[in-house]
Amino acid sequence: MSPYVSVLDLFSVGLGPSSSHTVGPMRAARAFVAGLEERGELDRVSGLRVVLCGSLGATGVGHGTPDAVVAGLVGLDPETCDPDLVPGRWEKLGEGVRLPLLGRHEVVVTQDDVRLAPLTRMPGHPNGMRFTAVATDGSVVAEQEYYSVGGGFVLTADEVGAALDAEAADRAADADDVPFPFANAAELLALCAREGLSVARIAWENEVALRPAAEVEAGVDRIWDTMSACVDAGLERDGVLPGRLKVRRRARAQRERLEAADERGEDTTIEWLQAFAMAVNEENADGRRVVTAPTNGAAGIIPAVGRHFLRTHPHVAADGERRRRAMRTYLLTAAAIGALYKRNASISGAEAGCQGEVGSACSMAAGALCAVLGGTPAQVENAAEIAMEHNLGLTCDPVGGLVQVPCIERNAIAACTAVSAARLALQGDGSHVVSLDTVIETMRQTGADMSTKYKETSTGGLAVNVIEC
Image (cartoon, rainbow, N blue to C red; front, side):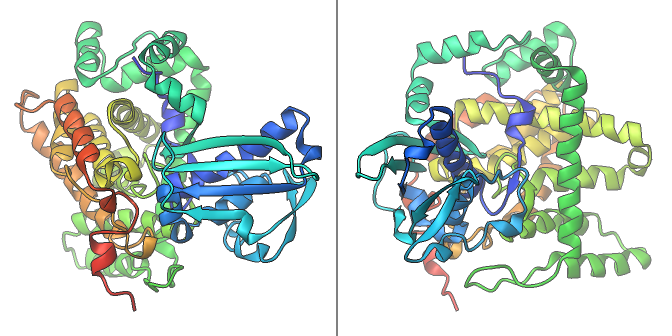
């Protein structure tokens, strides 16, 4: 059994436009220089070389990967840094700039020192990167390989190897002292039935076994508050998104139209749901503060469906404590479902295509909405299965390597699918032909069979068939 995945790890606050191409590389760069300092090696470093391989190299420029790496080297954290401090850092290196590693030890770094290598595939994952620190005499002070495996999670080469080792994974699971470990949806449902607990309560009991209850509550509340603030910011901000596509933001104009339609008494429920999702993903595309849910490319679905629930249940939204409880149930349920995808398939677009990002987020949102609408664990599992079943095979083919087309609209459509899946599941008793475990395994197999052209490399699909103006 794989290690327990905490809600506070699966949902992490970071920057757009990509959890795997922006957040992960920034964390890797920061971890590399922090490791140098911890070992007392930082002051020996006179130069750095970074190679971004595979998918990171193929769409790195559009995803802001080199900028994120430079930001990480100087010690910026994607969770706390000012988003405006990241863009343009790589290009400004030019022929050489004195870069303060961790904000204190300066070395000269050129733009060529952070190199894109799209045709080089490292063995552990499509999103591989190699950091090398050298001394004045040219000798290597330290070298480390990292993999950005989706959702902002970063593993070293050794950690990837351990994750592939079943015995090491079993040992890691044993080390996670949680009362209700589960490896798949069948085990999760069995726990719910045996203990008479909901999916959210199983997740809660595991969380509070790892950290104080007050810390869990505060962490989950912060996640929802950040998601909700991102929706609000996207509904207010106007302008053109960065990149050569010159995509104009639409969420604000849509909000203004919907407010007018509401005054006329029109039914705008679905349109508001879509606007919420687009608002978040426009913020993401603009490099703003978002929550990986479970990735940045799919960051709009879970916030949108959560806001949809509150908008359609004003008695819950108006009661502060009741709203908090509902959103905790929502996010804990979503995280339990998301952990199944992370453990048994992938949430990485570079590994599984967009089914791994938008598909998993749609599934998480569907199950979570079903839960707050009063669904049983069996109905929650059914909702999650329905949502993913109709995202199987979804490719990741961002036009221009930018998380804009078709990503923004794709989140809006997936949010609608999640709501439909939840409501469909609530019409039944939870029994169904295709299990969630089956559809997750099918997604894994589909991702393994999918051509790399359709897995976040922008070398196939819409990315090559749309003419960039």
